[in-house]
Length: 441
Image (cartoon, rainbow, N blue to C red; front, side, top):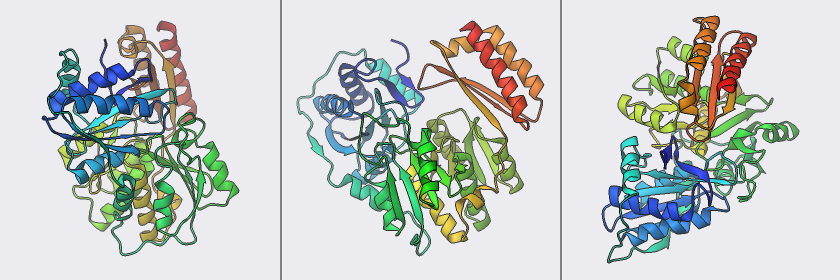
């Protein structure tokens, strides 16, 4: 078996790569390495058809090792991070493949702080998979976690810090991608008196992320324009990321969301220390605007875990990814799409300015993104012809641009990003790199 954990837990085709047998073994390995006998573990899942099957295997594995299991049911991933602390649990697990297609699934684990496991912890779990099964004398209990969604919704509405946010007269279209946010996101926004138009909010695991949500913004954009809405909000299947669409149909991505929050806090004097953690994929435009405001950008490899760990190291209040995975450490230790939406609406309300106007303070450089399928992406990228192509195109691009070529941590893909001042040149450089990869894969 190759490495089991990717950049976001264990992920693969449900009932094939990620089988009930592997899930049961994972629970036993996690119990042996990370949880003492008699520990408490909380499990959530998204709407995928395979979710209940894997939930049963995971819960059984933990109970067989003497751990008590709380089932939160269908609930966004960041809710588990919150509930770990609220329930004083020792560990949390989410069964979800995030933005992947319905036939995939995955398992993410969170420690007692609500943080994703470290690389070292994941390596220990993988090593423990080969240990013989151990069954506890005292079998753990498996029970439902009472009112988990209600408590999480209360946490979200309580995250507002100014005296009152009233969204009466504001129409918001919400696309929940048939996933885990469908029962909570509209409810939270209506709490602030917004008029909410629901899109893909029913729990449909056979259609999760299919042509909708944060990876497919066209239906949301069309609905915003059709209903003359003030804002569109799109989540992915498990709700840890969000993208916004303005009343005129423009996308407000994670870079601009981080910029809005950082500039607002810096000007209020609450961004202490004055820095933002982002990844190598974040736009140069964001970095330059922050620099003008004396805010430093710290870049990490792609992956919200890398962002979260760097935020702890630098004591940062804001971090995230271009994809809309935003961490606001004053409120949560992981990315939370609904929380991000609420806090941005609070900023807009406090400033008396719509979010697009705030976003336009952060001009973005053109970026060209391409995905190339590859059976062994990491090994392929080490080949001399591909390295040479990347170097040559980097010289063509010059100092005013960047090239990032990396293996995907969740799919058999190589991701190519070229950024610079001229989109046509970026397209040419990207095409040449993609051609080199395809020639030698």
